[in-house]
Amino acid sequence: MRNFLYICILIISFLYTNLLQAQETVIAGKATDYCGKEISFYTIPDPLLSQRLILGTTKVAADGNFMLRLPVNQIIEIYSDLEKYCATMVVEPGKKYTVVLPPFSLRTLDEAKSAFFKPAPYWLGLPETGKSDLNFLVRSFITDYNAETVKSTAQIYQMGSKETVGQIIERLEKKYPDSSDGYVHILKQYAYAELEYAVNQTIPEVVIQKYFAKNPIRLQHPSYQKAFNLIFTDYLRKLSQDSRYQKLVNITNSGDYKSLVAFFENRGYLKEFAELVVLKGLDDGYYSGKFRKEGIIKAFETAQTTSSTPKLNVFAKQIEAKLSIMSVGSVAPIFKLSNTKNEQVSFDKFKGKFIYLSFVNSRSSDSRTELDSLVSIEKELRQVLSIVSIATDDDFNRAVQLWKSKGYTWELLDGSKQKQLIMDYNAAVSPSFYLIAPDRKLILSPALAPSHGFEPMFIKLFRDYNFKLQRKPPKEPIKF
Image (cartoon, rainbow, N blue to C red; front, side, top):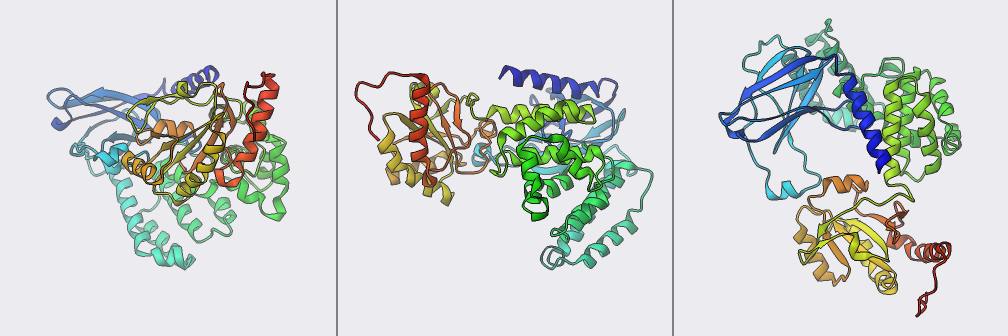
């Protein structure tokens, strides 16, 4: 954990080094319904980690006035989470903006509890800014682009009409001809990339070569980020399933980062972009079951010293740190959650036992199936194995009712407000399972589901674990 924190400090230092020479961009306004509340603005610096970089935070004064000075060294899109809304705007270095916030509106109880709630997007009002400001051009293009795609949804996404896509791009280009503004040009190009990908999904290389392979990477541009993630999520695994590129499995399993980069360079990708694709592919592939995790970690270690730019070295370090947290042998992230009796439960309650930890949702049919499969396992192994389920339901009471109706006897914990814990365990998909040793180290991450052979695997691991520790046999031997 200390190593991870150290790496995070290095990464934050790296990100802010780029901002030290930045000009101050000022955001100010008056919002009496936000009096006394803190507001922050952040940006998303890249499509790999998709983590927030906080640019500035302030407290709204008693009279409703607020002002933030943000370090900005290029045109970027910034965001502020304001309960039900995610406020957004485009800012330029050195400019001052007077903004109008959305009316303050608290989330509902269910929204506040949900780990998956997303605030509605809200373009900030700019009452003192002229119509020539970049924000109005960006918003106008996005509005027209969305209208065009909605109007032609069937032709694009069901019929795969390339002619329709070509006509939409032609109409948008007529209305928004290229200018000297690089930001809008990138916005348009990668919006078009999304459209063309929609009708070329069976041959994505056509779109990749046209918009990505030979162009500079635009990490901080939201249009680039969106199109990149759309096309390249799980791309390495998908490509390796093609009989022509099966060698990618062996290269990845061996941790040969340089050969992976060379593979994509040979397809005509610029080196920096080839490295970006490889880092994304390795990150997505870690939990896919297609590649050896040890090979992926080795590749990330190589990438930290051989990538063509410092920023990609940093990404490799942070991704490896993120993956290592939940790797076999690492310490499981801590939790302290309420159970059905409103008692606070942590690892301390299960000292000396293995823990089979599951993240479940009562509305998920897969979760309900696996929970039923846990019943016999819990009866057979309760002397040495504690079964613990964390409910990710928006409403914990719904999970409690399931427990009562089914007569489940193991611990149920409330994970309804635990966004960070779900992220720490990479458990956004329910159900997810993990096996944790008595010393709180992960033995299986992720673990097999109950209905997929967990019990015999656990028995073998239990025996191996105790043999390695040279533990004395218990007074009353446990029979399996």
